[in-house]
Amino acid sequence: MSGKKILITGADGMFGSGLMDSLGYEGLVGCGRDFDITDLALVTDRLNQEQPNIIIHTAAYTDVEACEKDADKAYAVNTTGVQNLVDYCVGKEVLFIYVSSTGVYGSHKNGAYIELDAVDPTTVHHKSKYESEKIVQSHLDKYLILRAGWLYGGGRAHSKNFVYKRFLEASGKDKIYSDDSQIGNPTYVIDLIEQIKILIEHQQTGVFNCVNKAVNISRYDYVQKIVELFGIKCKVVVAPEGMFNRVAPVSHNESAINKKLDLLGLNVMGEWSEALSRYVHKLKNEV
Image (tube, rainbow, N blue to C red):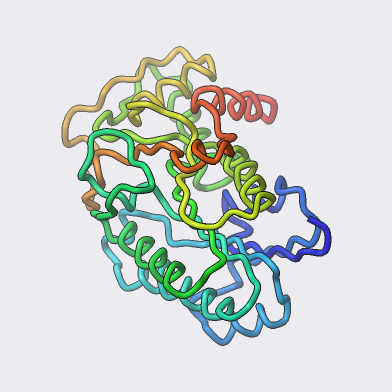
């Protein structure tokens, strides 16, 4: 994307660092932990200095349990922080790309959600994300809201590397436990990055589900596949009820279908198990 400057928030996070490494465009500017999105003056000064053509906003307070315990921080980062970025974009030819979550749909369906379904989030985290979606939609014309789910990727050392943590947990054990009470779409950050490139290049705007394809896949299924792909002799057992007590009233169903991408013929996000296989192969080469 010649001549365009793209600013990425959360550039030192799992997804943001993946964008910095793999987006493949010139003119990338990364803003990491020192870029406090809750500080309006700092945000305004930095954006006025950089004058980006595209902002990809990945920075967020993502700990669902912690958000429930500290709602003020959740809304400060996930909602006010977005408002500060959006304020800069108003009246400018800036494409604002906001990474949201399929968790915003809530718990009113048993099957996969599409973009036309009602939104009724059940946790503070997802409520704060949805409030941000509303800010983006009400203030801007040029935006992409991408509802992703169960993102994984990055290097072994990343603190939120769910896949590698399961490898470590299962290594040397006869069995581990995993919860089967929630379904969703394990989604590889590299596949999401490729989807973002397609949306930018086709000048799309609006709200899109962006997940790898998964049908009735539970956390248990996900963990079992991780252990299988690593070739570990460890049995994954369905956790008894109450073993993983959570403060946050998470939905039993965060699964989604990329309906709008399918209708446009732009869906490049494949099967979850194939994507996970590619990622585990990559991790094995790092071990």
